[in-house]
Image (cartoon, rainbow, N blue to C red; front, side):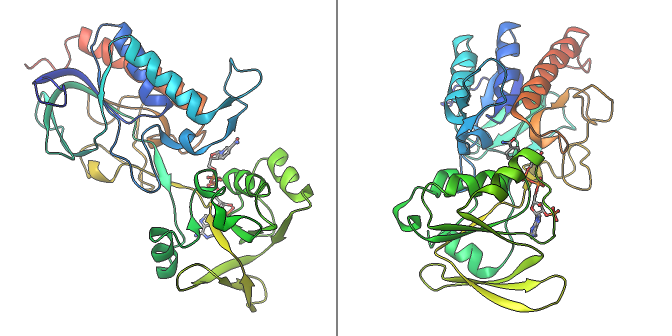
Length: 328
Ligand code: NAP
């Protein structure tokens, strides 16, 4: 056994720590598969627990009629999995070899793990606009963030004019959240209608603290120590303008955390893990299953992630009960 608690050969290794991962762990632990979870090492835009760690109130997770805080929900799921004997460590998996069996995985600290089955549930990560100043100021704490719920309450955003980029539910949620602290919130969207659900879009449009810049793209992020303005381009007229701001929140979607898999399993062009059989979590490699946002580019909800986590654990259990890949 390594000092992480991982054994020489595990029955099931689960990668991730969002609703999909913990639900898979709960089911696997109760099925006496003794799961080991690699929760992730954490980064500036992703902490173990997944995207719900960046959310305030979750009102659409069944069983909580008054809503539940995202972090509380994740900690409850984690505790539930640990209560049934799940073992876990805060490390990333950085390398996999699914051509050999048992499957071989290597963690960010160099721990080598062999597993009879694997559940991929690494979730997805925030996308950035891609301007050099955006990255620099995000890394230096210069008023640029991809997570309003994590950073919005920081003192330097108080009573400022803040920009939120995007037109989806994340942008609406971030903008509405930021109205608690900001003097004004400006949503900058590249089209003339929102992608967000009707209810969220209507809430944002109706909010007196929110103004919307329609048909605008961000051509540059300006600021030395801290962000001071954005250069915008009108997508219809081509006209350029400057928007002075005291903070920038980028909410333009997510990228699945599948890069380290390389070609170990089949990925879609968008990078999401392919699960070729409808209503199954089996990937292109028998014995390797995928659940949650790393395979779901359509629903992307906590409850669907949890559902697919359950499916993955049941499939892994049945696959192993039917002899796995037959080699030892
Ligand atoms: P999303 O639905 O993919 O929306 C991304 C938004 O960013 C779109 O409006 C898109 O513009 C814009 N965008 C993308 N790339 C851009 C770029 N390079 N420059 C400028 N704008 C760009 O992502 P999301 O809002 O993160 O939502 C993801 C999923 O989570 C959705 O299914 C959503 O319903 C769900 N969600 C739900 C809640 C909730 O229920 N409370 C909260 C957050 C998220 P276009 O519209 O022009 O493509």
